[in-house]
Amino acid sequence: MVRSSFLARCATAAILVAACGGGASPAASPSVAPTATAAASKETSAQAMTRLYELAKAEGTVAIYSSMNNDDAKKVFPLFEQKFPGLKVQHTRASGEDLVTKVVTEKKAGQNLMDVVESNLFEVGFIIQQGYTQKYKTASFDGYPDQVKDKDGAFVAARVNNDLPGLNTAKLPAGVTIKTWKDLCNPALSGKIAVEQGDVVVYSALRKILGDAEAQATLKCIAANKPSLRSGHTEMANLLAAGEFAATLSSNGHRLAQLKYEDKKTIDWARTDPIITDVQAMSLADKPPHPNAGKLLMEWLTADEGQLAIQSTGRVPANPKIAPKYPDLTNFAKSFYVSLDLRADFDKDSDFWRATLGIK
Image (cartoon, rainbow, N blue to C red; front, side, top):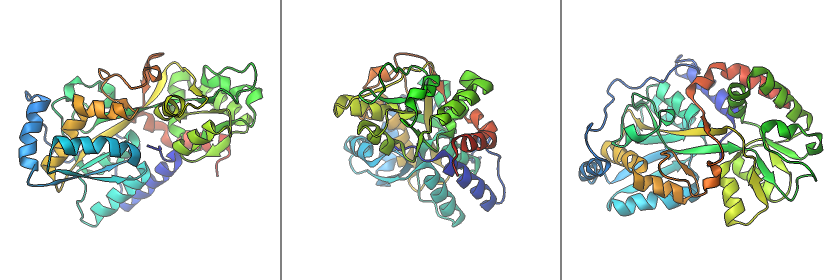
């Protein structure tokens, strides 16, 4: 997945709040439709899937709106279809803010076309706030860390993104090493760094990790190195591998690992402590056209079989008992999980980010 421009997400959310006649502020806790339901409390994943499959056969389809890229989706969803013959996955792929726009537009038109939505936590949190989802706890819900789920079942993650400084080891200036975000301040890296211009969430995380003053100072000195502003993590990682720059402030770890291990590029990543971990939230629609198939897909994605399917793509499964395909994405430090609490200073962080980096 390419995580979309965070600034665009912010602008979209603000516009959509007005379009919906108000709504919760960006920092508010998620709310969900009052008709929320949950799986039977003592069912195993296998039992829940067996029950739901019998009901879902008549529905025939499950519609998921997701920011998972098509290449990964082609590896994951056919395995679900093989497991449950007669069911087809309709995957609508779009960036986070585009998914928000699509869902809100459809809902305001009285259309209920999606069964499941899955994307970055901030976008899905906004959709939840608008009342377009319902609570649903999968049978495996209790086995997931608190950081990747809402305690009441508003969302649960099937995958996470590790946000790490990317490195082209062949392009780093002699004697330069990057182990922390502050190492990107080295004047030898002037003109050799790329920044995804929408990564405000990374700055928000750094404020919590480093403290306000140090995070601000770090971003200012990175900005002094005149970074190249880019849009799209996948494209930026590909350009890093091509040698267009020596480092990135933040790249999706799984893409860096793919370039390093599958494509044999001179790619590595900084072993930051902690690892900024972006939760990819998944939620059941409030009025799903295929309710049983939607629940079944969520059950499968959060069960071991679905987690292994996600693992096979190189992405990091949300359930830590399923080891990632590339262990060195996660085995060097603890995780710092992005949470909805980070949205509390949404406007302030965005303004500082834009002003410091010179983003128009």
